Length: 109
Image (cartoon, one colour):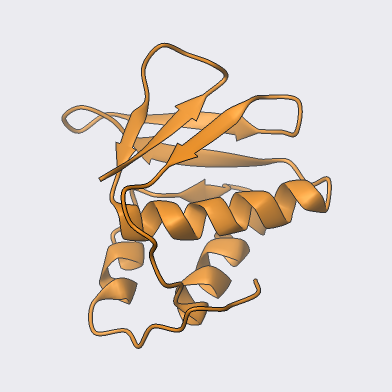
């Protein structure tokens, strides 16, 4: 499991390494383009939080493993991040996209 720390808060969001590696790639790409977006993450129980991702807000990604990226998942996440609703990690289709996917080590979103 990996961790996403948002805005220097003392607590972090726990996210599966495979998903978090893809989120990191999407966030870095969007921020490099000076594009802000909403990111919805699951928290304890059935609740969720929506974070505003902007270059002025500090983020820290902590992953235990080097995870290969899956291009179709990156494309789906980039499309979500570019939509009016933002990237919603509570959407189970992202987890399903990893099942049985062929992995590649170098991808560009």
